Image 1 (cartoon, rainbow, N blue to C red):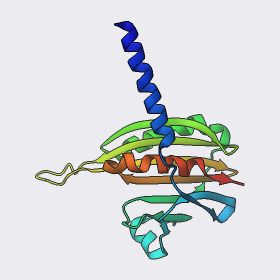
Image 2 (cartoon, rainbow, N blue to C red; image 1 turned 90 degrees about the horizontal axis):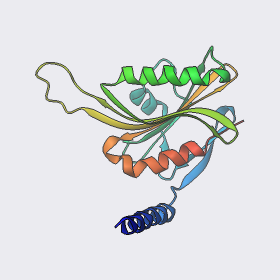
Image 3 (cartoon, rainbow, N blue to C red; image 1 turned 90 degrees about the vertical axis):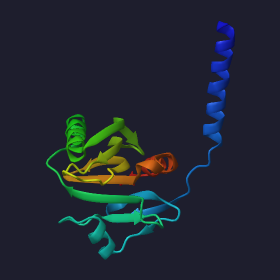
Image 4 (cartoon, rainbow, N blue to C red; image 1 turned 45 degrees about the vertical axis):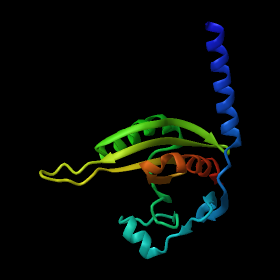
Length: 188
């Protein structure tokens, strides 16, 4: 009985491995941005014009770049701001950013919370699904659910934030693309 189970488990692992290897890799276009940043932008994504950025990302500081899919439901953004922290503070910043994300949403489920080296640069990586519920009385609005992959890097006194977000119900479709985009980031 144990041998059958072990065989079954082995075949299951083998099948999963082959399926993962056979999955097509997302097609990315190497795109240079200001400040020596290069990243792979998914095929079919286009840059948002200034008025589109202002409507979708209302903030005092405009993102460095925003790319959206054809339907405008999935976004890739790059933003920069000054920071008093240095690259030696990544452990502390991971905790701060995680707590900040938890305070922004009604519910958060973290899939990844890590510090990783990508293309010879350290990044804080937070991958999660979030939900914002309308808590007003007599509200019948459905919660807004998102899948997000966010990476933070510090260079000098500048914090660069890379964010990929998609509707949570499309996570399975977009997660491999988001991960490929984040692996493609190069900062000089």
